Image (tube, rainbow, N blue to C red; front, side):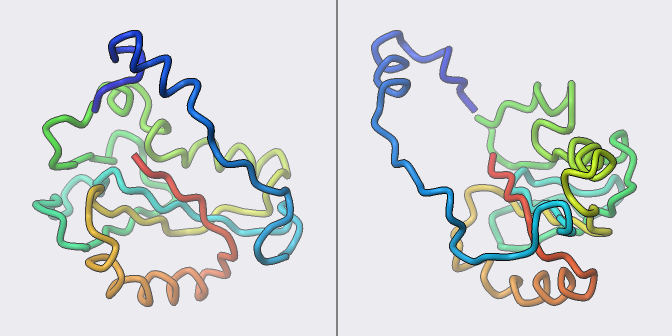
Length: 153
């Protein structure tokens, strides 16, 4: 994946100066205060546990990642040849910020961290992911997760 600082100067400037939408601070749905929420992650980095079947295409499949999986056992099998894996290789939290989430829980910013987190293969059409969403939602509910952080890459 190309980084913005590698773009030609005129294109980089265009992207940096592009008008972006602004949003009100009011959430779409009111919920518990953040310090009472149980939070999980959903990534599109093609992540999975070492030993799990790697992602082979954009099939809409997902992988479950347990909360206490050591960083050394988190593998990226993203299929894009243009995907820059260097940041992930140095610090898995750039694609899957589980350690930052744990710190937020320890500091009382969020209530707790969910037991399970999820990863899809990026560049997958949403309609291919949709058949799996009910299973993830049911698992999140069973774990009392009420918020997710989407980690697109």
